[in-house]
Length: 213
Picture 1 (cartoon, rainbow, N blue to C red):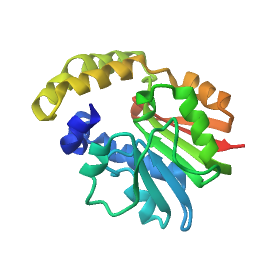
Picture 2: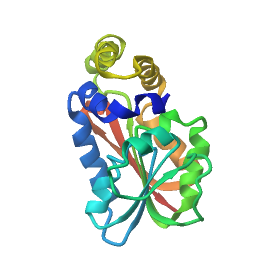
Picture 3: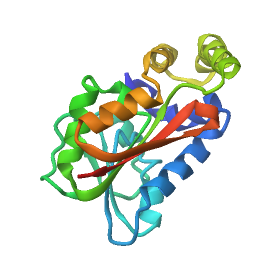
Picture 4: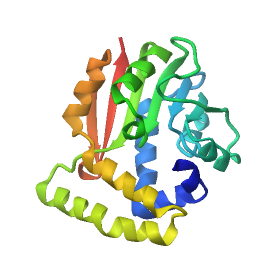
C-alpha cells in the first residue's frame, strides 16, 4: 500500500494536513534534541523527509522503513536508508542515542512489540520520540476533526493521491488510535521511563517522549 503512494506521499501529506506537517516535523526534531555525533534511528521514515533535520544538526541519522518504494522515492536525500521491519530491526542492542517515529506507529502490526524493539536498539539513557495522530482536547474540535476525516480528507486524496483507498485506510486507523494517556501507558509498559507528551494543533497530533532506563 505504501509503495503505491510513495511518489506523491510528501505532497499529499502537506495538502491533507493543510501545511501543518512541516510544523510537526520541526517539533519532533526539537523533542529528539539530536546533537553533533549522536546516532538517531528514524523508524517508518518513508521518503526520509523526517530524517534530514537530524543530519542538519550534525547527527548520524538512519532512515528505516518497511516500504522499499517509499525509500526509493526519497533517493535524492543523501543519507543512510535501510529497508527494515519495525518489529525486527537489523541493528545491535544499544546502537542509537535516540529513536524517532513519525506517523508510523499505528501502522505496525504489534505496537507493544515495536515499542520494546525500539528500547532494545536504544542505549540506556537514550530517547524515544513518537509523533502520531491523537485525540483533540476540545469536544467541538474533536467532532470537527472526525468530520474532516470522513469527508474532506477522502476528497483531497481522490484529487492528489496515486492510491486514494490507502488514505481511507489511514483515516480509519487515525479514528481507531488510542488517546494520549493510553499510548503513554503502553510506552511505559514497554520499559520506557519519564514518559510524557504534549499536544500539537489542539491534540490532532501528540508528541510523546520517553527515556530508556
